[in-house]
Length: 344
Image (cartoon, one colour):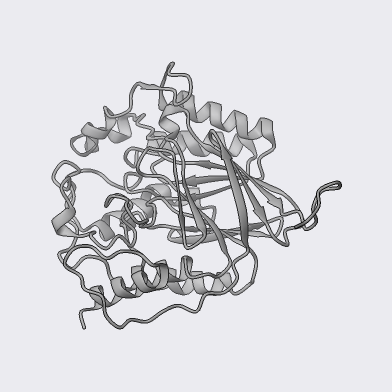
């Protein structure tokens, strides 16, 4: 059986998802679902509250994505043929709440100041903080992060390491510019996979900026979740959710060359004819298969949304280029009914 079709059937069987046109149903593997530690959540504006069963100490996450900083200096002149389009993309924006004029630098500084003011436990930077790997922009961010004293966890987006039109495979380009420019942002951690445990919650960052997951990342994830701690997953590309378009591309059954309509605009190699690798589907199944993943936080589409996949919420932040972020509280779930309320 075709591996891609097998993976699609497995996902559909596990989560009750519809298959795209052209795929037929048949015998497939199903996942043994376990009790997940996610309990319930609520949202109001860009504030999220996740109530977790068994959690003892509250934690606060500020989830930031898609700042698209474009500042550059003389060091970037040799690369201007590759950075020109994105250098003009977000020079001026409108604030996601007020509609007032703003821009990425102002938005990022205001976000850092807010995180300090609120005493955030972790700043989650999950991709496209930069529009291209500008040394000036990266140095600027590192300086402000250092001065802030904030604990942070960074993973790359598809623009952070990409110079449009530069020769080389996407894997080669990501590896090159991660090593040459982005590496200090990982604070000694692995660029493709990292984690921090704060107040009993394990925050795991996985680089899916190529829309796919590799075997090392899958193995890392499997080892990390063995701890039994509630897991919060930070990525750039959101995971496939029923009814969402292909930009929710990590695990999307229609992801591939046929659906890649902007590769020429972005100056990159087209997505593969074969679609996703089997490892990406396996990772998807393990994230949403009923383990101890409590929630997923992503960006990429520049829109605040939430989807619930097999009981697990996936939150997308409004773009930080427009002043956006998600302020997230992880709170203990009350085990008893409040006084005066009769339990039915």
